[in-house]
Amino acid sequence: MNNPLNIGVVGLGAIGGGLHVKYLQSTSNVRLAGVCDSVKEKADQIAAEHDTKAYYDYKDMLDQAGLEVVIIAVPHYDHPEIAIEAFKRGIHVLCEKPIAVHLNDAYRMTEAYDQAKEQFPGLQFGLMFQERTLPFYRKVKEIVEGGELGRLTRATWIHTAWFRSQFYYDSGDWRATWAGEGGGILTNQCPHTLDMYQWLFGLPARITGHAHIGKYHNIEVEDEVTAYFEHDNGMIGHLIVTTAEMPGTNRLEIIGENGKLVLEDGELVWYKNPVSMLKYSKETPHRFSQLETVKTVVPIDMDAPSGHHIVAEKFLSRIQTGQGELIAEGWEGPRSLVLANGIMLSSFQEQTVQVPFDTDAFEAKLKELISQSTYVKKKAVAPTADEDLSKSFGSR
Ligand SMILES: NC(=O)c1ccc[n+]([C@@H]2O[C@H](COP(=O)([O-])OP(=O)(O)OC[C@H]3O[C@@H](n4cnc5c(N)ncnc54)[C@H](O)[C@@H]3O)[C@@H](O)[C@H]2O)c1
Image (cartoon, rainbow, N blue to C red; front, side, top):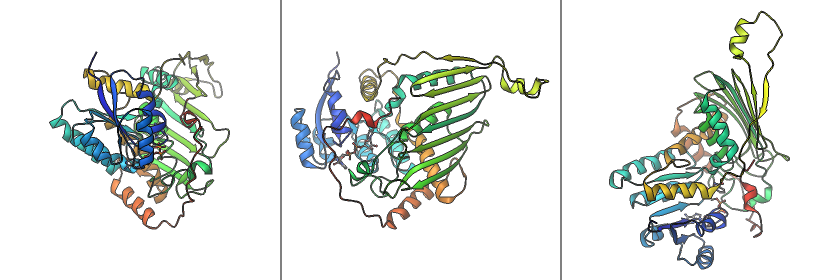
């Protein structure tokens, strides 16, 4: 048994107060050494509920609580500053998604981490991409990496199961504004989808994005997006996402020369070709014939443990033992931002962007949107306390 790690949580809203502090109570080998929220009443309440000390300024917590680990669960614009201050003090960081709003900030974080590691070699930086723990995505990854699909030709992901109401957007004054959140569905709900895309297929070489701003909600950021990705190996990708579909769809089709994988509603179907489609296409003497494919439903252990606490457990275990894989490493964070920022830059510029693109151009555009904003946020309404937070995550 190791000594318990002193952990602090900064940001005690929906995810920090509603989830992180709760599972930490039953996580072995940790002690909640402090909680911090800039809203004093929130910090006091959560500290009292969890028998720990309240802080109202994150630097006070980093300096005074004897922390070894901090979980960052504040709105995205503040992730970089808090992470960088923690790294300077040799405090391990588990940061909520997205790593940051734009790539320049994300790279500042990874550079600060690399620099701090020279002084604190065991320092860890992990990201809360808990969807990577979901059993059906793990199975898809295993099959894609196994290579049985052969050369991949297309991946199409319709992920519209992120329904959000106007009440949701009104429930926090930072939400769905350029200044407060820095984006809409690509910055808040879809970082998981974008991370999963790059985790499975890598980054494309070219991105074409079409984003609709406030099309179905009274917001100033995007709530409906279609993107087209071109990879150097010839594979193409499509992404269709919105917060305005009911019922929503979560359907991922992956096509390779040897068959097709379709993941929908947690069910994974594998269609296997008897020979490579590319070979057959080249060699067959017939004009219209197709080969019989074999269809199987891939068994998945849906009871395998998954979720935020698994990400945290693996993170803490790496710190304590110096071993084991993290669910998502800090350096992987900028990769989903390449997709998110690239799609928006392409949409604003009405042209395809090459990867890597000009990250300063995206940051400048964001600043312009902030300075020219005329959007007036409706006064925030407090969400009902009994709302089921787990409905906001992907589970199928
Ligand atoms: N991994 C997931 O599934 C998941 C789910 C929800 C939210 N998130 C992420 O978690 C972060 C927070 O989201 P949320 O929905 O909990 O937001 P929220 O508005 O419910 O809570 C944010 C809290 O942070 C506090 N805060 C803001 N700035 C602060 C600062 N500088 N110092 C201390 N406290 C500060 C606010 O007072 C608020 O209590 C976001 O980055 C979001 O993308 C991740």
